[in-house]
Image 1: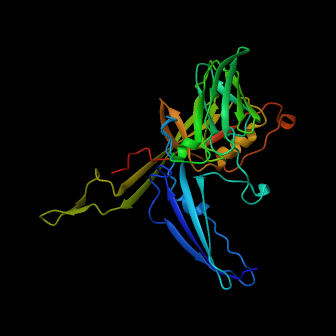
Image 2 (image 1 turned 120 degrees about the horizontal axis):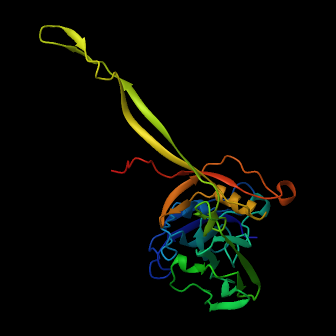
Amino acid sequence: MANLTQAELQLKVWDGRFTTDIPADPTYTITKTPVGDDNNVRFEISELFKDYIEPTFSNNYLTISNAVWVYWTITKTFSDAPDQTETGYGLGVLGYGYFSEGINPNVRTGKQIDNEYVYLPEGRGLSIPIFFGTNGVKNVRLYGGGSLLSDTNHTIIDPVVDEYPIDLVGHFLVTDDVDYALITKNDLSTEIVYVEKVCEPKFTPYKISFINKYGAIQDLWFFKKRTDRVSFQRDEYSRNTIEVASDSTISYSVNKPTDVVLDVKANKKFTLNTGFVKEEYTETIQQLMLSENAWIVEGNQAYPIIPTNQELTYKTVLNDKVINFTVEFKYGFNEFNVIR
C-alpha cells in the first residue's frame, strides 16, 4: 500500500447553474496529513457548504432557494507513488440523519417527506416535495373519487448538465379533489401519499412550512385552537432631573421621570394545535422541532418563525387513543421594525 503524506481538498460551492455558473476558484482549500499510523484523511464538507445556503420561502414554490451545488477535487500525495486526483459533485441541502442511521445515511429519492398521510383543509392545495435526480421520480398519478385525475411524467436529471439546484427537488401540487397520489420512481418502485380532507368550521387552519430531514420544504397544517401572546422587554436607566434656576433655587419637575425607558422589545408568540392526526406524525413534528428554518403563512405571506418547545412526548394510539400535538412558536423578528 502506498504511504499517504497529505491530501488536499478543493471545494466549490455555488447556487447557480451547474456548468455555466461554476466558480473559477475554490470556495475552500483544505490540506490534511495522516495522524499516527492512519493512512487516510477524512474531510467533513457539510458544515462548509451549509454556510452558503440561505433558505428563502415566500409561499411561492417556484422561487424556493434551499440548496447549492457542491463540487470537490481531492488530490492525494504519496511518498512512494504518483499523486492521485479524485473529483465529484453533489446537491448540498440542509438535511440530516439520526445517530441510529449511521454515518452518511442514504436519503430518499422519491417523495421528500416521511409521512404517508397529509391533512388538507377543504378547498386548499398542498405541495409535496419530490426528487428528480438519480433514481428519482419519473411519474406522479393523482386519483380522486375512484378515477385517475392526472398522469404526469418527469425527466430524471442524471447526469446533471446545467440545471439549478432547485431543479432536482420539485414541488407537486395536490389539489382539494385528490384522494391520493401514486409516485413511481425510476426503478419502478412506488410510494403513496394519502390526502385526508379536513372540514374545520370553528377554527382557522394555519399552514406551517419548514425544512425537514431531507432538506426539502414540507407543509404541515394546524387545524385547531390558536393562542397568541406578546412579551415585552424594556431597558431602562436612571437620570438626575434636578434643575438649578438663575436665582440658585434648586428644584425638580414632577412631570419628568427619573426612570427612563431606553429600548423596548416586543416578541410575539403563539401556540397551534394539529387536531387529531395519525401516529406517524410524531416523526413529522420531531422534524419540525429540529428544523432551523420554518415559516407560517398568514394572508398569503410567509413569515419566519421558530418552534420553541423544549421537549416532545412521543404519542401512540395505544397510549393516547387520539393524537393531537400542541406546538409553541415565536416569530423570527421583533414586533418593532428595528431594521434601519
